[in-house]
Length: 360
Image (cartoon, rainbow, N blue to C red; front, top):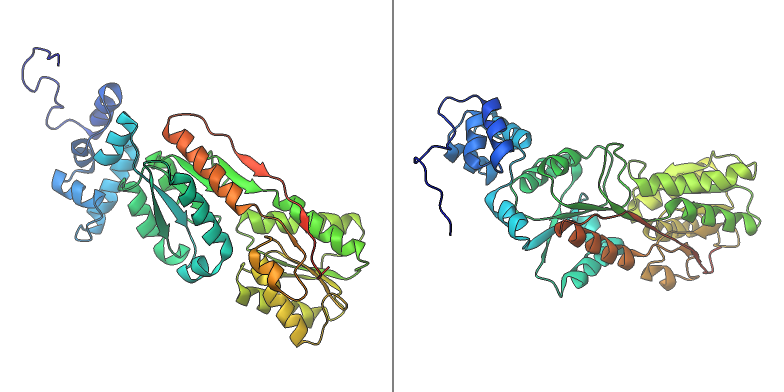
């Protein structure tokens, strides 16, 4: 070790220095410390530490001041800062902004978690699951990310305006999205399937069967998957000179699919073809059609999206569009590991195709 001679404290910030002075010193010489955060926020180091560690006993005003100082200085807690210096990250979070009942019931999420976990199996990285409802749990998730408990994030099922984009940007956490983020200011790499092409394939298949009154049950329109699948469907029908009136919106859940199909039939009883934007919704829609006395595919042809295992278990098997969940999970994990190594990561969109079944 080489030591430099000099007076003790010669390089310490002077007492009473302004917050702007703190930021200037930090940016010129070293990464910001917890002391810098406390000084800028006008609180004690202990209070700043409690905020970083998500202690609920801190007053709201003090918490807001500390979080603002963290964002302004670009502070990373010691554990995360250490891992960046020595390049030894030890955990990545898979962040899913959905209710837990949907996460554990939807094969898309189980396939995504399995793919990430398997890809990390031969690495020192541990996967952490961070989940919650957007309206209720966004603040808790944001505090977790800002506190530096993880070294990188894979965001799955992002919704427009879910409030986490600012936290991810300000903390500068290495982040990869599964699904194209809708925020126009997003600079994060992502992996996705060509959802728009999938919607086109589904609509074209229904047209080729001779369907002339074609409807759709969309996914959530605050997600790229919902928007893009709907856009592909609409494009093909518009080119064929058909109207886009038979549209109901779902939420990628069985209940949402059944309710949307019920509304669609009530409003358009002459329906003879439907594209449903996920297999889970399509299976529920099939049950709704059968309950209404409509035979699939004789009376109403049906196409889903995901090519999940359950699609082959129906009678007749579901005609559906592929969604390469396992490939996307692996690729997202690879991109995140590139970012953790300080390398660039490039977004990737996977192709899709139609899987033959008996419903269309």
